[in-house]
Image (cartoon, rainbow, N blue to C red):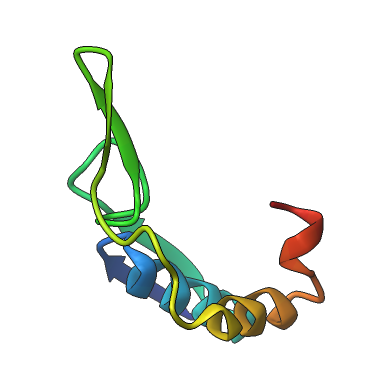
Length: 79
C-alpha cells in the first residue's frame, strides 16, 4: 500500500504542502470547505462584482519558483 496524506484547506499553505507531499510520493487528498481552491488567495464574484479574498501582492515570489522547480517547471510558462 502506498503512502497517503490528507490536507485540510487549499490556501497557499495547503497547496504548497500538497505539492511537496506529491513530490515525496504521497497520494494526497485536499479537503476544502469552499467550492474552489485558493482559500484567501482567490477572487470571486457576487452580483457582478469581483472580490479579492486575500493577498493582492505576493511578497515572496521565490517560494512559488521553488514549488514549480520541484516538478521541473517554470511559472513563467504557465502564468
